[in-house]
Length: 242
Image (tube, rainbow, N blue to C red; front, side):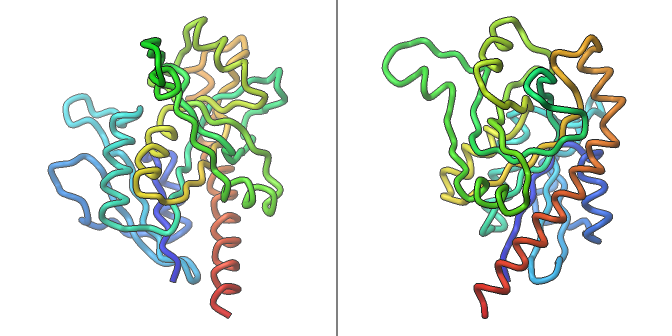
């Protein structure tokens, strides 16, 4: 049976998936950590889903690279998956053809706000550059567009950040994928980042307002495409076992 681990930042993003897949909460990760884990079986796939959890003092969802790194490390250490799926929401540019609710698969993942101009390889280290070869093939089979997924720790963006993001042909701006990709690279585990657009970065509306208004739609579209992805993985697993 193929082992799939899904890492999702926010409970609002994960809820449709947990319900549709019939996953139940487990206690596989230390209770001193904020991460929440869920498990179940979908067709011939063994599924573990990890969310970052919430901040115990402020009560908000743990978003950004720090909780994503923790969740990814615990997930890969505990579950030893054959594949990691980072499912979540993102921003995109309307001028590059993106619309609210569009779903992309990342063919490349990088940071956009880690600028380390110390010479040598520090600049490249700061950017990160994680190619997702298996994701490209899956996107082709699903008929989904691919993008460069760019990770940073701010919901808004500085002029410098915006200039970097605009360098990419099709870009999804979010807050976790590159951190997860970094951990997955150490475990030599393939990663698929699948992202649904909640906000348009060149819109006249604020990112926060668009995110709040479109989170439900984006999460619904994300759930539908993740299920299609799991169906494809289940079919591939059956074919390989035959």
